[in-house]
Length: 170
Image (cartoon, rainbow, N blue to C red; front, side):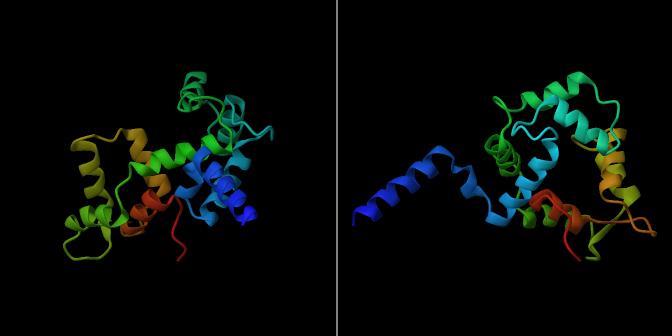
């Protein structure tokens, strides 16, 4: 009996100190750990401005302003270790609608049910309605989700990435 009680107390202590790990499946935690390791360029266990600058440079973003890097780091309440990193992702994802809700919104724009929307139509909506996208945001969107040769955008993939954080394996 004693070992069970001790084990139960230990589990409660672990869960109470950091409930963020219960928000994700083990495979997701492993993927976030890999991403954290890539971003933590100097391997000190903390993501710093220099780490962000270095990883952005490897992705071709060479002229990132110091203020932008400071703003990124300040999104955390303190040093960004893996638990804080995971918590930040949890907070970001918590605000996202479920995949079916986002899909339903896109389906309104796709009366034929093709799973795609014309790039020009989507761009017009995103740049002229409500919380308007900037030219830079549109450039980033098309870089992440390039239209096919006919100019169609796969909105099902966009929905998947918004809710799961990665491209769907075809």
